[in-house]
Length: 449
Ligand SMILES: Cc1cc2nc3c(=O)[nH]c(=O)nc-3n(C[C@H](O)[C@H](O)[C@H](O)COP(=O)(O)OP(=O)(O)OC[C@H]3O[C@@H](n4cnc5c(N)ncnc54)[C@H](O)[C@@H]3O)c2cc1C
Image (cartoon, rainbow, N blue to C red; front, side):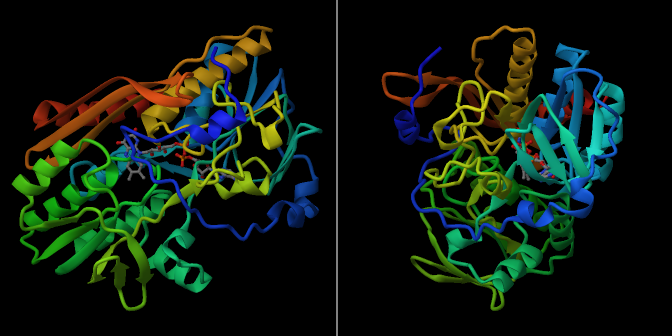
């Protein structure tokens, strides 16, 4: 296994699926919810059955955590696995755009955590994590504490509005509630769909953030899907997509062809355009070139690792996107450079420049689950690359998609990650359109049944 030092860590570069540009990053006013919460209910044991074996707690029931919980149980049925998730319903990000464009019903993307737990033999604890006492191996939730033998944190990402220069909480709240990015919660998808369905005309603005952001293809796919609704309904309006890159971060050829050939009157793509400020009240975005007035939209700021990690002292202070401080091969937490052998962190909050996508998070989670199972039996396993597969629906009549697929390897000589066995198909067609649905269906079946 390659040795990886803290110095190497700083050399990592983004490329391929997502483009680089990691400079900057705003500081966060880190409240200490944990310290404030340790009283009353949080001082009591949680109402979760006594552990029947070694207990592994997984925090975060997204694509990463759901996969971890299932594959831990599959790998070792004797493990006692508890999934802590603050939400009571799972709404999928992948294929939410197809629902927004009317290609699939809401039931396709909404799933039950109860089903996932019942079918896969683990406990779903509907609670929010507020603190971790690593020396005592105990987590505190808003509904009491639980002890663990191993802990996996997969809390996902948060938005960083300060990266737009927006720091006033009132302005942040205005952007979040009126022009939600649609990259973190199910409520955002519902608001976005309502906006698109009710749009009367004018400019519907979308932004692609700098840095490595969640799902590199989605801003471009979303532009196509929203434009397809406007086109179908003959709306006198267009999608304006503002992008700091000089071309789409991924599948550029396929997306540019779709913009041009399918949505010439409905998409204005603005590459190489940096956002310098946003006035949500007056609906204006200032760029290096011009001010862009908009009527409605979904404004996607730069992202960062979930703030929870920073509160817990588990974020890498040197990382521009405040991602997890971990050993990139074992996913063990590495706060201040010291490995915690009992705590793992994975999913989109990882610092490695892998595509922040559901497929990547799931294949990575399968490896981390296998590693924890092996270690419970006193063994180690070799590192395995995550696998990224992403279908992007660019046409709706008929449904036609493009796709990208690949893995990763660490180049020890160059001290950075590289893509490996990377393939792309930029020629949109219906066979890939069909595969996009099949891909999602196979993942949902695996996580929930
Ligand atoms: C619109 C859109 C389209 C996408 N399309 C694709 C696609 O086509 N293909 C693809 O592969 N990927 C796609 N993705 C990306 C994919 O959704 C993410 O990469 C994936 O969800 C990452 O999984 P995760 O588990 O790391 O994070 P998440 O899925 O965000 O899960 C994190 C979970 O942690 C929970 N949590 C956080 N803090 C706490 C706490 N304190 N206590 C309890 N629970 C907590 C959250 O509630 C959440 O459920 C898309 C994303 C978006 C937004």
